[in-house]
Length: 75
Image (tube, rainbow, N blue to C red; front, top):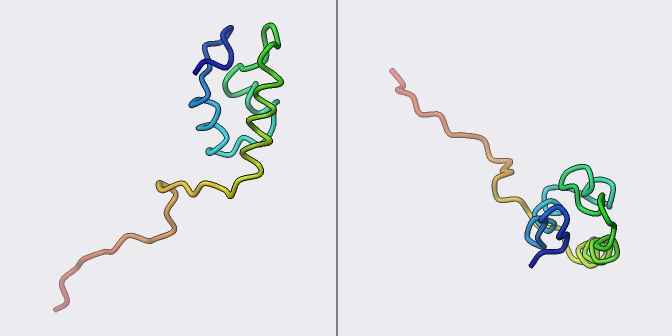
């Protein structure tokens, strides 16, 4: 669903930015442009930030701490 009509930002875009580390409105404004035009979406965006902050963090499956396994021959 579109949250910011002016900049064509969806709820999916906002959730993805929050999952990637955005924690406040200025970060979302810088990354997505949300809330930088008419401002009608700011309350909704802040509510989304508050709701996400109350949930446990989402682990990024691409951010692995595992090290690659190297295969080599032993003589």
